[in-house]
Structures are given as C-alpha cells and as structure tokens.
Amino acid sequence: MTIDAKRVSGTFLFDKNVPDTLRQATLCFLVRDDEVLLALKKRGFGVNRWNGVGGKPKDGETIEQTMVRETEEEILVTPTNFWQVAQLDFYFVDKPEWNQRVLVYLADEWKNEPGETEEMAPQWFKKSVLPFVEMWPDDPYWLPQVLAGEKLEAEFLFGVNDTILDKKVTLRSDL
Image (cartoon, rainbow, N blue to C red; front, side, top):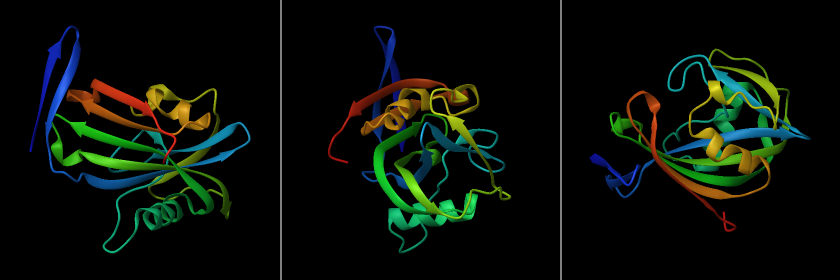
C-alpha cells in the first residue's frame, strides 16, 4: 500500500494505491440550537484534540450500530435521532495504517446527559466559535458546512505531522 504525493503548480496531487475498501470508522456530533458537543480525546488516536465521538466497528456491527455504541462508551449518551452528513476519506503518507473512511453523523435527540469517561471529556461549543487550533487540521474544511446543514464527501491527504498536503470537498445531496 503506497501513496505518492507530488507537487504540481503549487498544489499537491496524490495517486492512491490503496485497497478498494478503506478501514471504516464513525464520528457523531450532538447538536442543539446553536451549539455542538465536542469531546477532548484523552488517550489513543487523536489524543489532546477536540472532535466528535466515534470509532471502528466490531465484528458483525453495522456502521450505525458502531456510531451508537461508541457514543455510549465515550460520552455516556445514546443517540436516538441521527442522520449521516458526510463521508470523509483520510490518507496518511507516513502512516498508511491510519487510512480510513469515516461516516459522520449529527444527532439532535439522545438519552442521558453527556458525561466524561476515561477516553473523552465532552464540552458544548457555539457552532460559530469552534476550537479549530486544537482539532484535526481537516475540520475547518468540512465541519462548519455540515453544522450549517450541508452534506458532503471529502478526501484528505496528510503528510508528516498531520499537515494537509491535498484535499477535495464535494457537496452531496444523496447521503
């Protein structure tokens, strides 16, 4: 599995020689009025970054079942009304084991109140004032759009130190 990035006219283009199917993962963002719930990752992949909650499926789980389970495990909430808003493909030049397709969901109804766990510390933020400096560098390119009601698909190529080398974001109505 390799990813070749080359600079053409000041921008990077990448040729992917990766499996037809990327590792699957989920993200869920709780929304209410003009706020979104982010959680600070306390350990593992994405540590010390604000993000939605989610993870990888267990054997036999659908991606929606994964999203619900991960939300329960990470912030003690069970989403009851949710919908898919994005499909994000991530490629890492120096860490191909991190390559993944993330299906992103918003939820506006849930059971229980968000709570801190060993893995995540949740906090509400105004949608218009997100802590992008402490988030993944791709988030500014797609998260404001989905919080504004858009649906999209995107591809991001990351270089060393999680630098974005290339990106493509496309609005979609059929997710």
